[in-house]
Image (cartoon, rainbow, N blue to C red):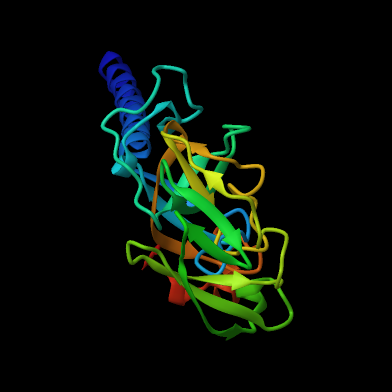
Length: 247
C-alpha cells in the first residue's frame, strides 16, 4: 500500500510540475517573443479586419513594463529598445487608459510635422504620395453596403499600403499641424474616416507604450463568429487571409 501511495503522490507532483512549467513557458513566450492579438474594431480596414487574429512580435521595439501582462510597475522606459519604422503596424497601450490595447500604423516619428490636408498626409511639408486604385463593394471589408473608394499611400521610406475613404471631406481629412515630441509617435488607422487615432483622442504615443509590431495573421473569421464555433468555419472562415504577413 505504501508503494501505491508513493506512486500516486509522485504522479500528482509530476503533473503539477509539468503544468507550472508549461504556464511559465507560455508567460515567457508571451512576454518576450510573441503575443496573440485579435482585431477589435474596423479602424485598420482594409489592412486588418475584425475577426483577424495575429501574432505581435514583442522584441521588435524592445521591452517596457507594458510588454508584460497587467503592466506591472517594475521599471521605467524601455530596455533593448528598437525604433519603429514609418509604416509599421504597431500595437500599443492607449495613452489615456493603458489598460486598453490599440493597433494603428506609425505615420509620424519623433520630431516630424504631420498634417492632413484634403485627405492627404503632409509630413514635414511634403505630401505623401496618394493615388486612387479603385473601389471595393464588399461589406465584410468596408462595413458599408455601397462601393467605397480605395487609395494607395506610399510613405517617404517606400512603405506602401491601401486605405479606405468612406466619406469625402470627413472630419479627419483636414487637421492642424502636429509636431511629434521626442520619444513619441503619431499613429493613424488605415480606415481614415473611422479611426480614433493621433488626430483625435489617442494623441501622441509614448515609446514606452509600444507593445510590439503586428507580424502575421494566423486566423480570420467573419460575421462576428468565435474561432471556437467550428461549425461556422465553412461559411465564415476567411481562408485567403490565413498566414498573411501584415504590411
